[in-house]
Amino acid sequence: MSLRRSHILVFASALTACVWAGEGGKPPVKVGLPNLRLDLKKKSIEIEGTFCVGEYPLELLVCQNTMRDYESMVSSPCEPSVLHTALLALGLKPRVRDQKDPAKIIREGDGVDLLVRFTRKGKVVTVEPRELIMHVETKEHIQATPFVFYGSYFFPSPEDKKKMIYLADAEDWLVGLLGDAASVVDLPPGSAGQYGMLAIDPAVAPPKGTKVTIILRPARDRKPVPLPKK
Image (cartoon, rainbow, N blue to C red; front, side, top):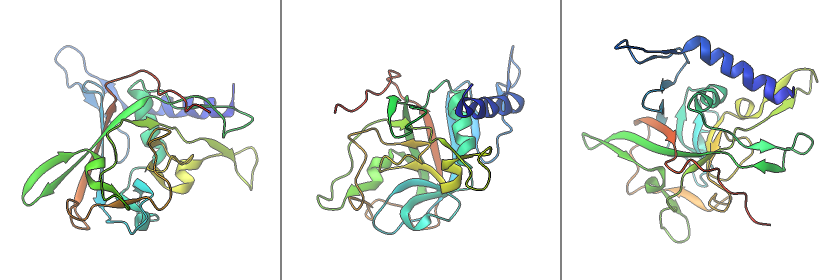
């Protein structure tokens, strides 16, 4: 069994210990995952965060805590590996990488729909992330597309080669926008922006410090995202 697979199984085992599925009129779901709400019945994940109003250029949709808030739209206390675990619980499959060459993608990850919920002028609104993000040159919002379960990957610790580190945890990287390998979730190939292309649209974005809920669900089209043509 590969080290990557063994670590994913640890995630799944931890999840099994935390989640109780309701039966026969009992409460449908109880979740013990930290800083994340998982609803197996509704097939949804919710993580709380704070709007950062990251400085240009925008690289991440969501970072963990504040280490990358200067380049992120939202900062959340949710740990990337916890989000990975919850996505697995919804039946989503991450990217499959070549074990010898992590840059080589054998199978693309499943699609994920994202929504952002916050209060704007006293009214709770729920929007797609793209409605808050624009291309720097054209000033147009990015295209509508499901995100992808990238899944990040594990690498040996420099101090102890027997210890594996989850890259997304090491980088505080939850949801990216540039197709980065550290991302748990990111935009699909061909849709991900390039460095320096994206910025927050100040005309529609909430003020810095606004409390935000990020909602993740399996994309309506559950077919695997195709690999980009070479």
